[in-house]
Image (cartoon, rainbow, N blue to C red; front, side, top):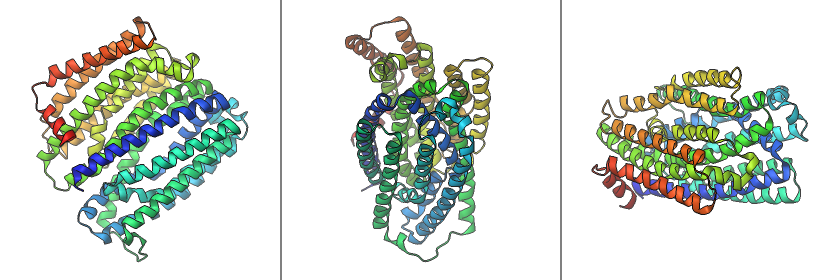
Length: 503
């Protein structure tokens, strides 16, 4: 199977499996709220965010090791692949130990993190340690999936993960309806993580039998140095993303209450789901771009980047148009009127979302070309700007959820939104940004107009009937399609889109 066909298969399996997972997750969340209440939902969100902070310890090594595997896989260098995976395994074992120790220490600060209301909930400490065990277990065997992903066999990983997710969610649904026990709910999640990682490990060793060899195979010092540098860059990126997004629930818990965290986390489920779809597609494409990068053809890299940007942004424009219209009525239908934010807050949530979505094509190239080291300061700066602005808006200005969202919007606009394209411009494209700047400017205008129209529709055009919603969706899609045709109708991007999707 060639590179293009594997990329298409990875994307197709990724999308199908994720939509199945998303559908089940929505159902489970509704039952969770009905059976356990909004406070447990808020506790779930806070503990997830808190333990995600501990994952800083892994330094963002997953994408670094995947990048390191591209060339030896292309050259079928079994010895080097084994050496990389051995270093990967040993590193993640140490990370598991460190995360365990830090997680135990963090128990002392749990009352401050979740507040008095959270501490009054039964079995808080048991639930916390189950969350911690779930995080640690992912480091002990999860590294084996990277060799499959690097070899453009992500469809195998996604298939196993999706099947496990379905079984886990069905079991959680049954446990909620029969036992209404949060401890059992989290325990099922832990078992699912362990079983799926074991299955993927067996498959990886079957595909690459030489990984079973116990001979001591080591990387040379230059390779280790390169991995270390990219690990530092990956670490800084994780700091940025975790502080910008992982701290939101914690800050809201400190300055508001768990109920507000629960409502915010409901919206996060939607926005995270949309982001995750594109992130999974980008992860599926990164190995193909990485294998292309081994050829070191900057002109081909530029052409592929413009095609990726156009395809991604066109799909984003269509999805974003629908999202802007259906978000409010969907939230009312899903979790109820009392769990819906104001029009202004929903608009800010939409701006945060689109600012993250437009970054996805650049993430593909950063991971595929191992550029974590060269952009190492980006996320450090972003995290400081974000935490300062968020605390300013939430504390002295008392803006609550809106303050958290404004902090994210401004920190993104001031830092990563221009640094990431510049890194791609300077390295893989060798200073040739022809076509890329035009795409970014035109689509930026389109997304801005969509957001403004979405706000006007929510603020001044009432009606939550199915006919009204369908009419608004049709209008947004027609406006978006018309703008794309006007801006790109005479370009060759449409032909590239047709070629990539249908040939």
